[in-house]
Length: 358
Image (cartoon, rainbow, N blue to C red; front, side, top):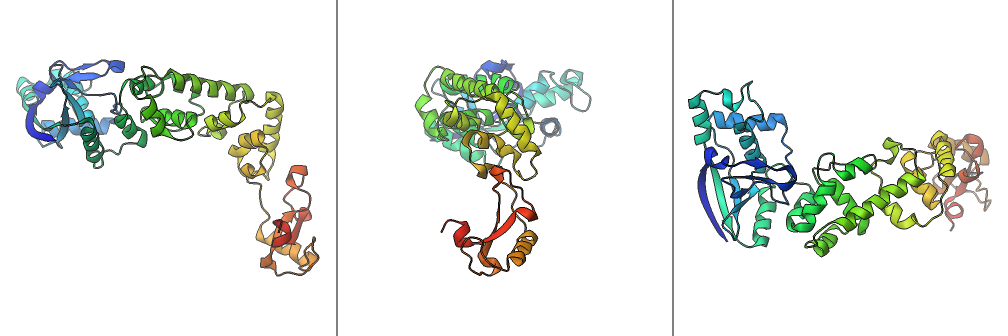
């Protein structure tokens, strides 16, 4: 591992700066890959971006940056991408600071900025060493999300193509599945979700296997199939109820069921109106699996249990033996699935053994 400390002027850094969107960002005379495949998309807010420019104008020191030296003696940023882009965008006139663009400044003010020197560590070593540095030095900065780190570990042709579908603002995954996904595309959470769905939550395993594949079309086709299936059986979108559910897992388990969307919609409306259903977000899995536990059916409260206990004089309705209150459960006389409600007139107490199948 070889690490050297150098000073790089903003004049040199911003030389030949280009933001090619999908194809990446370069600078330093075309020799610096400012946004390698595994780096996050630009996420600085205006306040953070302005703080960088304010630091430069006041000639205060910025935090040290890290560049990796490639085998071809060009460079890629390990840490400092967002500060670098903020600086280059300002010099290129893409935003103003204190109501002045760079070209509005006096010549001496421009020169002060261009001559400002950044402290950069040039790091030369193996891929694994570079990735270890990347993970370590980002701990103190804006924390990376888990998938952002995995993109670093498994960077290559597959990640680059996958990000095209899942990791851009307004990306294809957002266009068709934004109502069903939680998190942020640019923080790689859409990509992470899709991989979890297709490979039983084993993200690293899937990325390692596909690292050098030329495209991520398998993942994209799978994702489209999941969304198409959801829309075919639950065509009425209810974003509050549906967003963030593990739809890929549902698809994997239930895609071969023959389901009537009209019947399902009728059941959804009934369940939403049922005051005993405490978890509306569990309605979809309940309709697919038939398991009542996903609905969190409202339980009898302590007062209702006490009243039933007094009414029965502590006698279990099944085994006819006497028990203390704490040794008994409150349960529905008529089961919820058979139309029974969580009300006093449908409450009974049974001993724990009888009620829980002992």
